[in-house]
Length: 107
Image 1 (cartoon, helix red, strand yellow):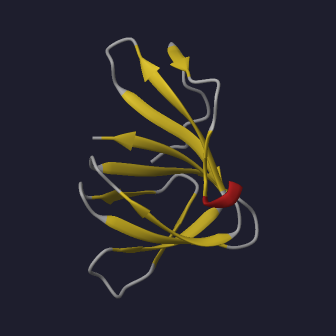
Image 2 (cartoon, helix red, strand yellow):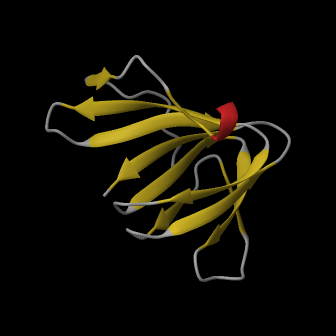
């Protein structure tokens, strides 16, 4: 997978969504066809996210370790890699060192 460096033709929510005391900050974007995504950064931390819709997390910079709900296995993902999270689920994510930049594709 190549790294997405630019997203054209979108409306951007100017107010950020701030989670976990500022350890994750994202901005929502919407395409003309109604498709929604978010673009954000996770600072060094160990966090748990819950999902409503299915998500694809695309790494843009940095790296993270991820454990999906129901799994004991941790997997590492870096820039240009992605992981899928089912709807109505959760995942643990650990970021150490440099921040993890991502695009979240909602399904």
